[in-house]
Image 1 (spheres, helix red, strand yellow):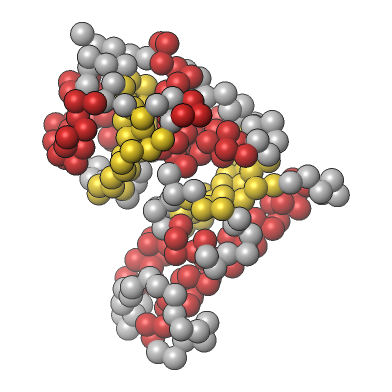
Image 2 (cartoon, rainbow, N blue to C red):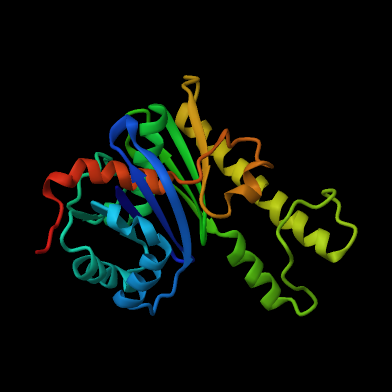
Amino acid sequence: MLLTVDIGNTNIALGLFDGTGKDARMVRNWRMRTDARMTADEMALVMRGLIGRYLSDITGVSALSTVPSLLHELRTMLDRYWGGMPHVIVEPGVRTGVPLLVDNPKEVGADRVINSLAAHHLHGTACIVVDFGTSTNIDVVSARGEFLGGALAPGIEVSMDALTNRAAALRKVELVRPRSVIGKNTVECLQSGIIYGFAGQVDGLVGRIIQEMVGDSGAPVTVLGTGGLAPLVVAESRTITEHVPFLTLSGLRLVYERNVDRAVVRV
């Protein structure tokens, strides 16, 4: 089985895949909190504890980190605890098959590249990926699978934290759909502003992006929602057509299959 590891700024997502190619399926998935001070040994302890009875079934690892301080710890962990099996870390030199048509390809986060790969693999059309995480990433993929760029905005939790820290009378609330857009109390007002506000932001940006991409051609564009906070907004969005919870983990599986012939193995 293949273990996929997506280290983000807020959470670390793990996925376990059985099989390859079209026969691959996710067996289990887990989430853990990201701590930028975590050591390789601490990371391995938590991950191995979560994986539990599946540890002996793992035959390879595919991973990425958008947290620079944890990238070194990730390498150390893989060498120390999974060194006897092939592992791939997404970084420059790894074959993704995604041309980066931007001013500085080195600036593009590994997660955005992997999401673009997975989205195009799933649909084969031009795609827009809306990833709801620490930041809200909107990534644009051409019909040929090229990464064209996108837009970045503060994420839902970041915005909520900033608001409650700067406004003494406001506090954090449960992020659920309120009974109406017009809030009747402070809690509902905050819920409405966050959930419907972010849905409107995404719809506005996606609409403008589609206008630039398509023009008068009418070519199909698939809009996908992913990320840990996606369920809050996807149902309220008019432009997101599909929710793919494990898009990044699926992309890591694809990258592993493209690079397993030269994957790192430590003896």
